[in-house]
Image (tube, rainbow, N blue to C red):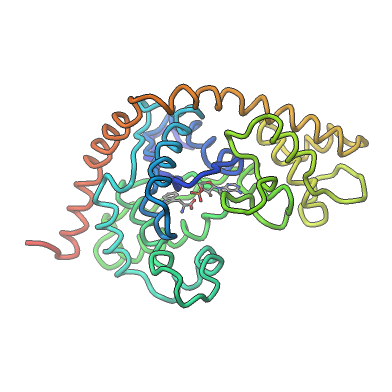
Length: 331
Ligand code: AMP
Ligand code: TRP
């Protein structure tokens, strides 16, 4: 990263079960970036309703993610924390970008393909989801977008849309953003099935470690994690996906590479590696859970989010006005 302060934007969907994949791939980057940059972190509730949601649950999850943002170390004095639907510019710019996107490119998005599986009654919102995500980013002239690997394709589309609009309406219409992906933790796999990514919605609770899981659950999920039968500790994603996933999680928490973890445990059994990983994970999540328990019930949370929305709106307003003027929209 350069010396210049960069504008950073990212978002997390307000669904339950925020897990260590979200933390190691995304949230941990959010915290690291906030000291030296101008960061805006959003709770993307409009994205969450692309699949039907119970209103009371959605509302609770919005506040859960806000409290988790702060529990992992985001400071509302340093970063802007807000809820997407509180700033109307997201929906407005999303429509404009929807009109600039092609049905072909949206059909190729793997997240859409996975979630719709050719189902005729898949919600249209799921299809245009990436245009809303592009709007989130472009609305703030963001330079950098810290995310996990699963968002790479959406970031590419955001860049394509920005470049397409700039070619037509002028190079200074949109800032073309870059994704930021970590080496360790950008793609944490499910503990029960290392071929699938760790996800909030998988049926099997043991497939993930949620940030608020108690110590017994963390232990159970790690000790049961799928490995292989050759008994050799080695980092090799192709041939040893289960063990490699554990090594990557360990490395991400410990701040070392997965290869170095493998070297440290060479010749030892999987049981030892797993037991130590339980300890590292429990220690890493303890302070997050403690802070969450303090922050979540506080009345301050709503005030912080309202204040964040006002600050976000003040940045978004001029960008949206510029874009509308270029397109010839309005009076
Ligand atoms: P979501 O929960 O889909 O809103 O994702 C929030 C952030 O977590 C995004 O930046 C994702 O790329 C990231 N993320 C989600 N799942 C994983 C995973 N299994 N490994 C690493 N990062 C992830
Ligand atoms: N689509 C992202 C996810 O599922 C969440 C998201 C929405 C996002 N808008 C964003 C991430 C803007 C980064 C920037 O993880």
